[in-house]
Length: 467
Image (cartoon, rainbow, N blue to C red; front, side, top):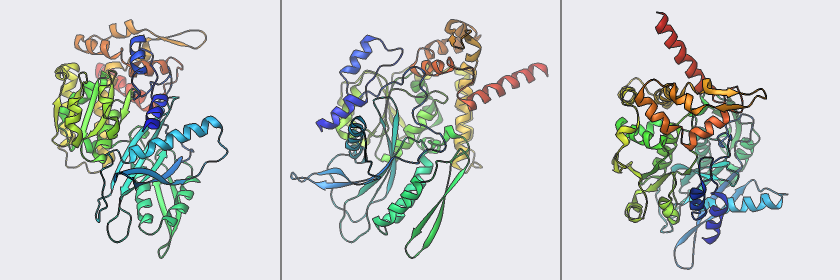
């Protein structure tokens, strides 16, 4: 376990733009802190077309130790990478050491079983350079007779697209029930195929004994910023009112702890909360499923967003942690709050978002997850459009093409006192700083969808004035 600790010490630590020496010092004493991105870096979960679908497929199995407990170990890896430079090899070894811990985050107390319901979840690992890799996991019981231990098929990718990788894991599981040997040609075909552009489809040919050649179509959602999210998972477990409290805490970069027993619920709901922040990105500690041995993450003095299994609730509450929002996803309630969550967001906009979420929640005509994602996202994007959509007008450009954000003028331009009060707090967050630093680099907006919504909003305002 010491080697895993070293992985986090080396990989999960760096200070951001607005963090002073005091916070940097706190980070040095906390090995679990996820690094902030460098000024101007884009979100490190990439969405570009043409890349490999994945870096690795690994199988993590439980091996019985001398003390009777089980420890997760990688028993299969595809592809085996060769001819790596020394630094690359060391980084790969640290990555492969960490993966088993996140595939079986629920500890070592396992026993062979005859029945086990497959579950899908994901985790995020952050490299020393700030780039993120996502682990898409399917935990299943291999076919056979008698008692058996579950195993995890984990696909490591730098691409964020939960729905797409869930479908890939469906195909992996189907082949696993036949033979491990059938998985390799499918994954090889996938690796040789380019990651499709938003809205496009890639077709994989795959041979299955007794079934012949199958054509598997993998399609990316049209809206790339929604492809790693399932808002329905959040709406099924929390009321719109509580979702707004969580959103308010996340916007001000506070400490958030989510509790559920199922790993799939934790990862889906935390990804959904992070997606509510679009076009901004959560840039602090982000662990959708915290392994049991890393529960002291909740003692971190800096912002974090983490998911913890409900069985560890008492241990979490016993930790000497600072103020945090603790959300029970099983019962759909908040267990602990700072107390001001109701007052963070401007009341008028808060009520409009609440009305919108309630309408979507009660709309029986909305069936597909894509429709739900679009409708929910729209409510939160509109919030940011109205709060900070005028940011580009307050970037002063020099002759050499570099921009400087005029923060004071930006805040002063907001006529509503309640809106201005919120924005003055929001501009001090790391997520806003990173967004602005990127905007200062180019006159061409990086988040095209957000810019489109800003343009539409201004056109609607002009139309209302002219009519």
